[in-house]
Amino acid sequence: MKTGLIFDMDGTLWDSSEGVAASWTEKVRELGYDRPAITKEDVMSIMGLTMDRIADIIFADLPKDERMRLLDLCCAHENDYLREHGGVLYPNLEKTFKALKKAGYELYIVSNCQSGYIEAFLEHYGFGHYFSDIECYGNNLKGKGENIALLAERNSLEKAWYIGDIQGDYDATMQAGLEFIHAAYGFGTIEQTVPELERFSDLPRLLKTLK
Image 1: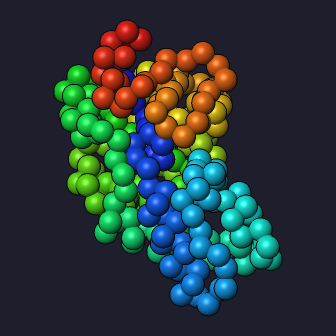
Image 2: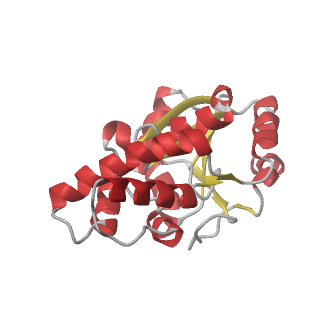
């Protein structure tokens, strides 16, 4: 049976909020906007949303077309920044990837991020060889539920879990018809009773109880 583990990014594999805030502030000021600095807290409040929703929140005072244009420029700069600087990885990430691959799981990533964001993560840390496929909102403008289902179908997964940290991740997983594991160390809580990870490194052991 081909079994897959599909991961969220922010709040599940890493916390990039500080780098995102720094890179966006840098780009906004470079473009001549007189605005307060974008903070880590600002970024954490919109993690997991699609890019159009983020633009509407972070740049709410600007005309709608200008919001997306500015966010696109910020995101392109963000990708370059994170490719160079990385973010904050959750403990024992690579060790756990190795254990999961050894146990026969195929690894994937689906995120609501812009194109290039997942690649920046993979390139900075050299993690690309652990993952069989990735998908994101920026590639096709599809929501997370659609992209989870799309990735599972094109990789012919017979069984799969999505691992994420916020309610929206759970809702998207249910839409896709997969099973869900909550990264409880991340940014959010889940209303439903689901399997929980207190640490990322607990995942191999937890999966043994879910087969």
